[in-house]
Length: 251
Image 1 (cartoon, rainbow, N blue to C red):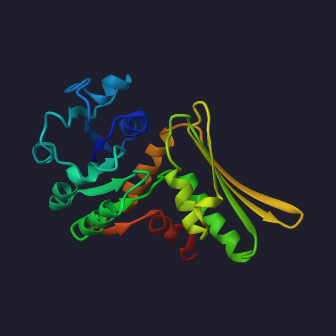
Image 2 (image 1 turned 90 degrees about the vertical axis):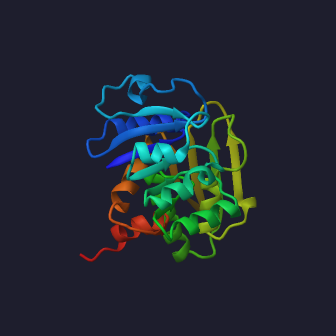
Image 3 (image 1 turned 180 degrees about the vertical axis):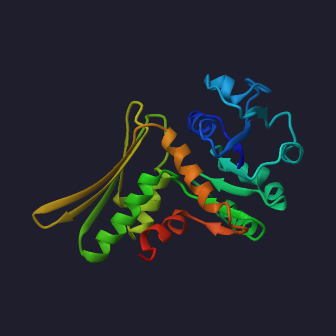
């Protein structure tokens, strides 16, 4: 399966690293905002020997429709910026290219656009695309269902430069029907990402913790989604849709 990657920051580079080393996927191109290393390969940039083309293009110098026509792909994986979906979304949907977005925060206009695009192609969005976080969401929901009166707090820790509340923490709060006041944020050093859900019972606590050790976890999560979307023609999906069959499949 052929992949186009949008975004080549820290997360994007880690995702490219995973794709380049996966035998079932080919990284056809990378689209980034800057012109650094333009027309070179992602494999060369990352020091990885791979048969994938992985050519790096800049949004400043290439038209998205020309890129999609000259270098067709099956999937676009987006690790760039909130507004990027407006740049490539309709062009991708018209060509029935499946979209996997891992953007942390989307506004209402972006969410509406995703819904519109899903009429033409399979579209996926998750604020956190790591498998572990989404397993945590399932487990936390289950625990709340069997203990509805429990006190719940969410703690999220990230690298010092990350601004705003983690989109993943917001998603956890929404899933557990909590107010954002229940989210406690920590910014320190180079923490990749850590999320903890604390359940306060009388005389005891239960803690569910997920910690990203490496940003490559984003890449393995994105490819897991791609493998599960490959036969979908259209529709809007999230991680619950992807994982539900694994949890509730018939024996």
